[in-house]
Image (cartoon, rainbow, N blue to C red; front, top):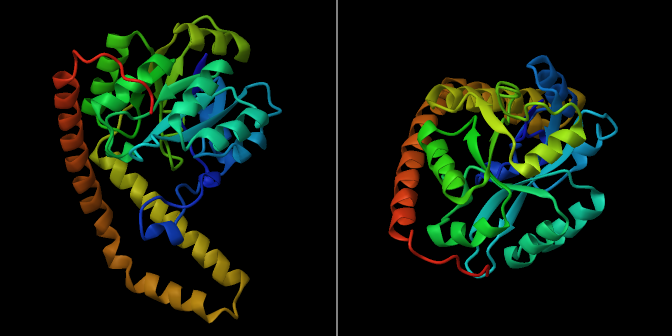
Length: 301
């Protein structure tokens, strides 16, 4: 059985990039759109893993091939460093507790272990996690079930760093598209050979009897996703203007957007800059990991 363990929908809320956080969504995917694409691309199971919410997943949770998931933003309370944790198989009660605890990872991780939830560390070698260091990673390792070693939106070099960590610490190797658009859904996955039901799949996941597969990220996939998100943003704004024809502010916005169409080349420059910075971050993290390889795992703080 195959599952894309990392997919976003419009329930993930607004962008975390300033100043886009006021106007642009993290994703414009619909839940049904993700479900249908994942199934069409060979996924036996479907998980929705929005940022810090399970509202999208709950809309299809009654289906036997759906796993409720969430990408939880955990915070190291002492320095504010954030990590993205892929949590699978949770329910509404557990989600409420997780949201109450996630701003102090020293409280969050023991709770996740107590509830026997499957927890992976997502895109560990990406700048999106903030200033994560070898010390933060070492503190997390005893509490993790798996590491996302094949992220469909990250560079192969970043995925290799994650794979090296998983091998060194004996963690399950997880794969997911990290798709914020329809392009990548179901194109990166984790497979549990021999599993026939959702329950058997989760058992295999906990036991580490899984293997990742599918595509990885590169410059053109990032540029494509930026263009797709921008197109969805404009589409939403045009739709709102049609619904409220008397709202002059929306018409002004559309006029400005039309004038700015030549700026659509900007995504390609943004993608290039993004991956240059991602490569640099991955290199620095690798150096930090090597320099601190002899350190004992510190306590969570």
